[in-house]
Image (tube, rainbow, N blue to C red; front, side, top):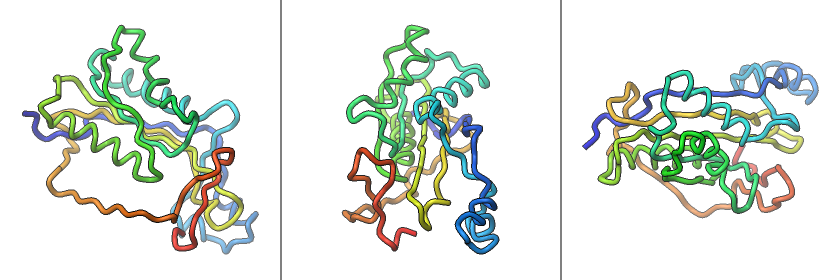
Length: 209
């Protein structure tokens, strides 16, 4: 059984376009430091019309595999966490398979997990659980978390952003997970949701901010 399963390596991609939070404070008429100090952010990245969660994810995965010299055939599970809907049926994972098909590797388990901020966490847990399980075939797991978070004008807008992170999962990791020490709480609530598929903006209750 695999031990000390966790994150072996990671890479992250931010779009080259961003908004300076100081400039957004001035534009919104907010007090100086509300976004930069209050949120701890200097910039807020965003996607232009030539980028989206798919292209960001492709970049992050390609960079990770190249940087750490990982053969695409060594990946046995690929999990994606995102709340950004590109297609109502086709998963982001299927787009990422382009990277692995070139090496002849189409035997990769996993699919997208969609659920606001928890999608990425669920994807990570799924990969860790796989490596720790009797189903593990000895190959690496790969987790991709990506979003393009865009909000309507208002107090939530400065909390947006865009990025993709890729994480290589396996045994004897420098960042190992204590699986028995984690807990979950989930309940039904309409506090943050996106019922209008034609809009990028979520519907939020005031207590979400």
